Image 1 (cartoon, rainbow, N blue to C red):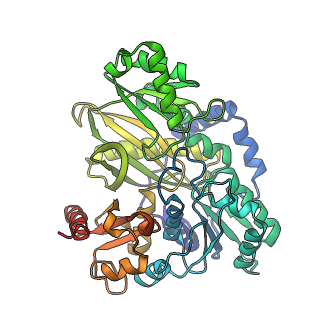
Image 2: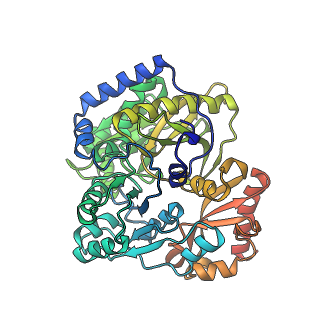
Image 3: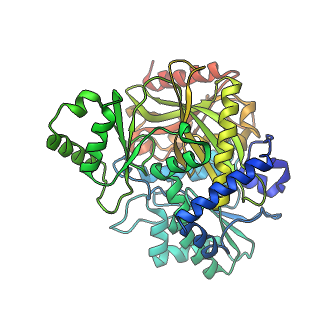
Length: 505
């Protein structure tokens, strides 16, 4: 599907990149449909939920502009609660919000942020509604807070107004509470409500590294995955790690439903095979406890070799429309950036600098995998993380590592660039996390005043920095920054220039 096939309203709602996608052949389509049918048979709940949520699912794009409700709730992702100020990460939803839209959160309003988004970036004026989470909830559990607190839910209904136009609920990910909120709002407002996300069970499984590896193998073949095993308790995980270490010098254990590399443990062969078996099992049990893994409740762990000979870690960014509308739109291939002192933890991304033949392989395989997901009922934002494993780029094997069945650290700035420039490819940029103690305590308004001369202004075209995810600025001195340049090299240098300025150099 080319974005031009969508209504103007549909294009505006999701800010797609204006590019062509070669359609799948009839043979490919038939084979991919067969894969999806087999995956449906393995988990019948996939089909059941298509019926359960039929009245809320997006089946076409609207011809008149609906109101949007944007909610970034990270609570289903394991082991995030230790990040300081994570409730403020939900402010990333403002990147997708426009005139008349409503954003939900659990944090106090950010002084100056909405003005920055509307006046500097020209994204329109949205409104923000917050409520404190219940005492037993995670501080960033936005959906649960509005579902369980009657006064907060009624305030939301009032904020949406008396309009009878359609309402698009645009969540960070399609977990069950997003769909429950959609049902409640439809009943309370008597409006048409659509949830722009996959149904809950499908959302859970695509974000589950164990199931995703299985789906990739079924779709593309075993050569496109890292050979691994699922483990359901500490003794099994410890045993599988030892077995894997017999043939691989470095091995890994991963939480199936974590993000940004925070749920990954990496061990060298001597660490695994050296200790007596009981001591090694105890060590793995301690790791699992530290990572909040719960027996008989958490999804299985993934045990794999850990490859160090990498020629890149590209990600595939997709928008998946309803299957009957058209094939996946592969919006971009990106090179992922990682922290120097923690090379499996995500830092940022740039549009890929890989040779075109390598990018075409990622586009082709990513579209095939995305098409299977569409046939399972997936609608919305999705991305795949991969590695190119081998001694040289020519010899490297493409392997799919995980699926981000949600908005993420690459799709968010990509979409923001599309909203500002029309096509992110027209403006070289680099997007990264940044934090420094000297920024701690600054409000957004203070930050805008201090860095006024470099912040991009859509009205004048001046400036070379765009900031978002600024909620953590005051509590921890952290934000996300996009730097612009006439080339990617200049955009990279401006990341360094910004850091030097913050450091006072």
